[in-house]
Length: 259
Image: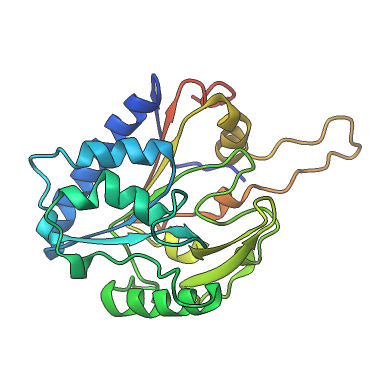
């Protein structure tokens, strides 16, 4: 199923993707603070988001003391591990800006088990993030990446997280392609954000991006046509009053049909 209302911004390269996303985040921050006095954001992992965080760290307009920071997902690794989303975000952004420590909420990978960490993170979000009319916690901005296999956050093909119950906030999930445990926010919570921003760069993401934005193609030679399963990223469906943007570079956009 293709998106019909997403804004697609095509930038030259990964650095330009980060710059365009930075503008979107700061615009959303101003709107959120004007509306309700704070700004809640769920961060993503990956190299392109890292460039974004480094840009945000130099912002002279952001009202960082009003920020509340969360994470869309986390690898089940120690907090100081090079693969930790928390470590990357801290080194690129959080160590350099005046966000009060009690307003930064990493996923606790020292909690014992992924399931316990997911339960504790659900409680943190339930306590600190206002709910949408439909009863789901509602971030002001959710940042997301896209994998070559169509995953976003830690919603991987074949993952149990894809069938999370509607009332679940965060879940532990085994990522089959990674052979590793993760903790991730559910598609329902990610979809409830006021603004959803995908950052996608690299030619290896082109096919997955086309499947998300243009719809899953028919399998060649099949009679009758057989549709491939939609990628997990296609589960992210914003509410009617929310915005959805894909900020992509030219390499990632090369297979898009509807630009």
